[in-house]
Length: 84
Image 1 (cartoon, helix red, strand yellow):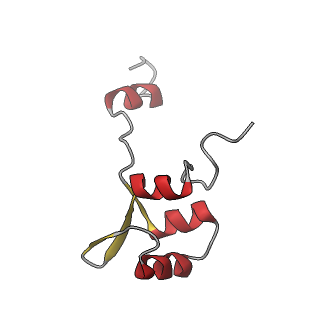
Image 2 (cartoon, helix red, strand yellow):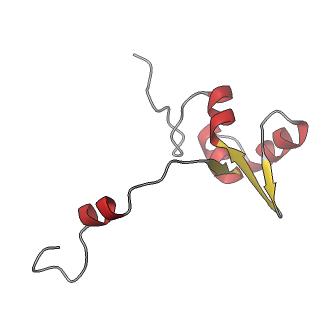
């Protein structure tokens, strides 16, 4: 921590708390990645086109099966490695 800082810097925080691997996504995150409405994702989940897990009332889409089907994407909706 620097002398002039009152708290930990961003770098120090990232070192102390490294970002965890994404295990699953919300319906909203998947809809943003595929650039469709959330309702389309709920329908695809109901049909079994997209693997999902229900946790109480929440629907979560596991990352590994999602990426196996749709390829590697960032949650912002962009491909992780754009084709060259």
